[in-house]
Length: 191
Length: 191
Image (cartoon, rainbow over all chains, first blue to last red):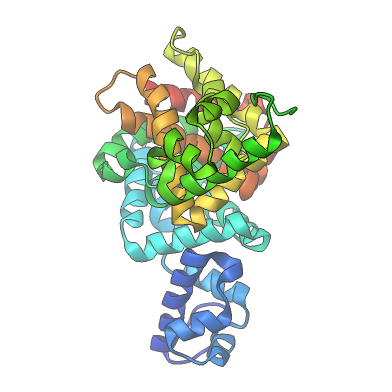
């Protein structure tokens, strides 16, 4: 295994643990998702979680990091103009949210962050280091970090209302319908 | 009784109504919880609910200890143009989030909604009937409900990243700095 912080072992076991962890963090939040309950869901001994991931915080990070790479949403856009960039960001993000595995990870992050300061800090560091850093290179304004944060806030708000609160209009809207409305807003932030 | 918007009366009666309302909204959701059924549960005449709380919206707000009335953010805007409207919505919303009591209530609602399907349903129905209804009157587009949902998603995202995740740039930004960036995005949704 090449992944930083992950100890060597049978890939299928660690994948099963990660899947169970994503579900557990997503359904119950960081605090309530115990090693024991995740191990039970994954059908493994709790000691294996320690063996593979060390701590709950590391398991959380691994569970969340694994399927979502910010560069998949925000990378390789520097050559486009602002309008094209905005539309690509929105479309890539929405198509990621349509994949249950990725959606689970994002919702796990959000659910955990609202109920636990440690998870909020991890999400904050993740967004700041991974997402704002990329977006900050796209916009050259002096308030680029605030502008990048506004992009993130619009994307997080869509995930919240489409997949957690499930506002009917947002649930029923297609990716195209949402992208057409949101892209100009995102473009405004990136300008 | 010192509580704003609550009319004087026997405290035990209004407490009984609030308990019944919390149960009713929680169990059946905002829409199905009628004044009549709540009055029945509380063992009082429906007229007393009107006497104490005025409207279902105010009863819901009181039951949740919810100090925000959508009309305070979204009301009385119909006479402005779209740009002015958007700026007023953002400024009113941000100044509400700056009041600890209001912020706590909003975050409590978000926290409940992300971890509890019943709370998510209550929030969904509340947003749909009270907020989207007002915003739907502002925009005349055929996709007005989706547009109103996009406004809500941007506002929810700001609360999440400014007050829960606490992204540094958003925490440090003034109301003015945020309003200047967000108002054009909101105006785009309302057009």
